Figure (tube, one colour):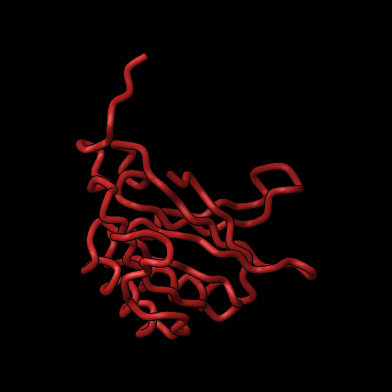
Length: 150
């Protein structure tokens, strides 16, 4: 599971609007900012978006932190787990409606594996999101997380 990812963007406000709209169907929301003045010089201002588990603190979750892109930085690619094919479709539609660029609509991607259903979008800075439902994955609620015994 992804804990957190920094995404460097050229326009934080525009990108925050995009990511909030694209991830809202999956239960993600803004939860706060980190002021660079509060820490070491190597940590910039950050703008947080998290899934329900991360934001509530009730379970393991994931977060994305947007930061202003510095000269020479490049974009990234991030796979976001979806619990159903319908969630893939909803996130893709929301991302496109928020101004994202379609880089492959919702479809089976059997060239990766049977049961791999995904859609791809890019934001304004060339960062890419893949919304993916893998038929073999369990629903990602904290109650369904597997317990490993040693």
